[in-house]
Length: 261
Ligand SMILES: Nc1ncnc2c1ncn2[C@@H]1O[C@H](COP(=O)(O)OP(=O)(O)OC[C@H]2O[C@@H]([n+]3cccc(C(=O)O)c3)[C@H](O)[C@@H]2O)[C@@H](O)[C@H]1O
Ligand SMILES: Nc1ncnc2c1ncn2[C@@H]1O[C@H](COP(=O)(O)OP(=O)(O)OP(=O)(O)O)[C@@H](O)[C@H]1O
Ligand SMILES: [Mg+2]
Image (cartoon, rainbow, N blue to C red; front, side):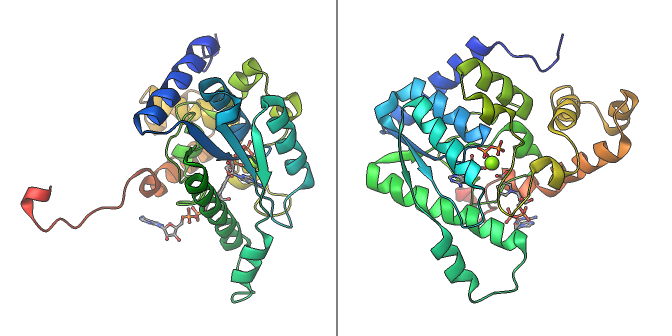
């Protein structure tokens, strides 16, 4: 049996219950999320629709001028399939205006600025609509630190962060997310031609298998390599986990008064 196999009915029920409970306990009824046309935001949109009903889920499509037109097409397809409301807010002017001060900025700086611009828009629209921002991070991205801190990682809740990427694919299939969204290569779409697997240097299938052994089965480096995984990939994953620890924590407070500890 595939060790990462999940009970789709059980997992989706747990996530839907979690979303309802947490959103309502916070005094909200509606949620908002960035719809990229990728699989993570599509799955969260489908789960949110089940949790809150189509009238209470709003998707925001936020292309930059270099974003792939296919991403926008897919995002629309997802909004239509889930029957949720959506709007489009172009981020080109805001991002380009900032980088007019720094014309030589690297693609990474530009990409992170785009992710943070989208966060600003989602938080602003959440105030307009009295809704909560849904995060779309999955377990693989969370452990690898593959997100922009205070950008796409900023949110009120993380409904799919206990699912590895390969589990996101299988749950999406179960919930009826459009096939072309499931089948395309994951991409942050922050610069032309970017793919997650190209930038990370290994496949999500390998990453998930290795992370499962390291995290869930608590195996150490050598034990994982003995299972047949390439040492370079295991080491790269271990390094990414270590270097991104700060993204999984709140900033440390310099406590002055003992009572505040
Ligand atoms: N130890 C530490 N403690 C506290 N803060 C620390 C730190 N080390 C760096 N930092 C801070 O963090 C910054 C670096 O982190 P960050 O700004 O997040 O940026 P960074 O991790 O350098 O880059 C983000 C990565 O995530 C990928 N990404 C981003 C957005 C979306 C997606 C996607 O899949 O859609 C993927 C992107 O392609 C890139 O590989 C540093 O500039 C520094 O300010
Ligand atoms: N063009 C965009 N419009 C709206 N939201 C976006 C856009 N690009 C990225 N986002 C937001 O940033 C999140 C992180 O992007 P990421 O690429 O990790 O996820 P995804 O696109 O949903 O799935 P995949 O990883 O398979 O591409 C998205 O889930 C989405 O909420
Ligand atoms: Mg994407």
